[in-house]
Image (cartoon, rainbow, N blue to C red):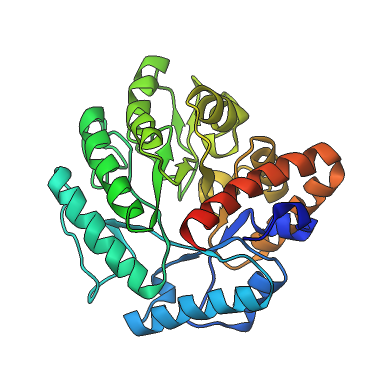
Length: 333
């Protein structure tokens, strides 16, 4: 394992980025992301997938290239929830239904099959399970993806997914903290405002508490603005939610990551430099920028500048990268 004390500012910055890319092989653009931006992870979409053999070759090639470039192994992530959100189609196993998992037995089957299939092609992180709680009184954005409107049911199914994936060396990422089941606007399009009471929000935290107790490798923050928790910033940029609530109050010391910063909830309201400053200040470990474009360049450059600004920033930056490297040591070495 590489020691973070020897990491350059560029390496410290790059490890904080998980990026999407175009194409289905190790292109010049992808090499640049790995060797120049020194990214910590890649996230795959259907645009990157042609067949199991091609996907296996792609994952092997990027890991070999990272090693040749003197970089740590890469997180290679995908959204494979089953049901409506599943990037891997046939011949990979598909889990139909809304939601696709109805009970603990379903969850255990899903985790076993999915972990085996991800491992076979070289993917090491699944952006699942969804730990959001549906609100049955509204047309929830998560109605087809969340396991239930009952927090206890969500916790039971979700923790079975976490346990099943992680005992097979696939990192599980619980999402979307602190819960988006009470919203109707899609944050891919614009920023939802949730004016639910603190008591309702507290109920939605129960599945995430269970995920923490089951040592979920990662927790993804939503792009929702929760007026009862932070009047100014969405969860994915919020010190009050990411650091004060999730880390300090709930005691989570795993990987905290944003949802995609290219989504309208962020890109329509915040300059990328502003978003990056907020993320780094909130001790959020990993920024997702899922599409090729200037946001990836700007996020890397801004993170380098933030780390170089003062020694306190570098100290906090190293602490975050230590969390990243601790997870890589556990799962990838």
